[in-house]
Image 1 (cartoon, rainbow, N blue to C red):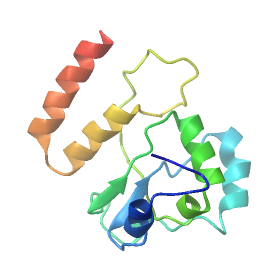
Image 2: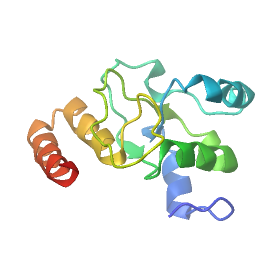
Image 3: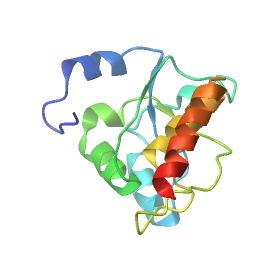
Length: 138
């Protein structure tokens, strides 16, 4: 569970490990550009900056929230601001239409996990989740 003022000791320990990163997009919509600029000197580094594009960290922290809420969590949590980040690339358009005011190019949490499974070569698991997701959405 996320807590701005009293973070989990396990989460803090994980965030300190070199093979752990926070799933978070590299590029934010224009309205967020100012906040990103203000945060640039205190935010953590990109996990995949020195690695091959398809390299995944051993542990990924996923904020199960809307992208607007996730940005707020990051802004309000000093321990998350300093975390290394990992961004998905070349993702399909979101099929999740149950929520209004979605961020352009943003995926829901389950779609992110499906894409992570694909990048990790876990195609059977990705297909099972995709099937369940499609049943839920349609």
